[in-house]
Length: 442
Image (cartoon, rainbow, N blue to C red; front, side, top):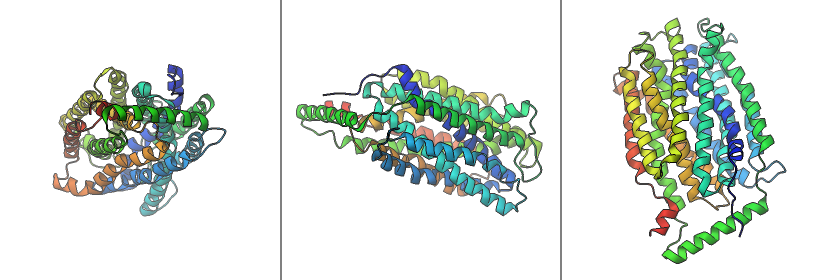
């Protein structure tokens, strides 16, 4: 019976290469949304509410993309058509969002325009992002899956690095980093424009280089996996079918604490370092906009940490040890942030935070897709698994203002809380069962 072959390194890279461009868009969004809406006039206690929309759209869009792409078979493949549509819409919206304050609208109208643009941007990013995860699940065998997702994590963080440094790079090149009250600086606008161009180029490259398996090939792979599961069941007396749901829920518990932590990083880093390093809370001040640029630099440092740690993660023989250790190191980084009053000293904690991010991008999908190997509804399940990313962000965003009041309205305290969340997530890692190992040892 035919099984999935080992793929060349170049093929593994090509499958995920477009993710580099998608992640530039995601990085620009995550590093600049709080800055954009604060510049438009949002109150700091309300900033977290603007972050509800992105994960909410992801929770709706990704399961739908998974469900429908499972049933889509075209000459281009079944995942790639959704990738192309998502990328095209993302490019358009990336040119609109940073201009929310440039049309002479009232503050409320500008925020409404910004929210609508954000909704479409996150919808399209999610639509473009999910096919890459599914293609790894479809095309890569269990032996290479950890390596494939680590490559995806590497490209993802390389894209993040580029997106994060764009505003400060363009400022250094002479593009204005300040603007009239209520308008987004040109340095941010051009970051989005160039990011959009790179996004579409990277996606076109993946579309040109990757050929998805045919329905007949996928049927053969599923039959081979089914035979293997039956053999394990005959040897152990237990079915492996229940492990997929079990792993899904156990990894989801870890995801809850991890993504809530990063939601607070994206929301409150700008305000924290503006306060602790630049000693300002005035969003129209040059100091606040400098802090906004520095957030991009810090997130770039985080991406460097993630890129380097993504190379180390496949070396861990025990995937759960590597996963948990990464979260603990990232948690230490979060706790350090409010105590760093020098902008360069912040490089250390954000480098450490990158370790957690690398693990979050690679380990959960490795564990879940291995548990789902051979399932014809892989895309649907991975789309639903995205809810374990979206729900914690929605909960964290909805409670952000209340919690901020509870911790004395000090934004730095929210990052300490994020560190605690990662530590709890690290403990929960050891509750995860690995499907085949669990079945064989039963």
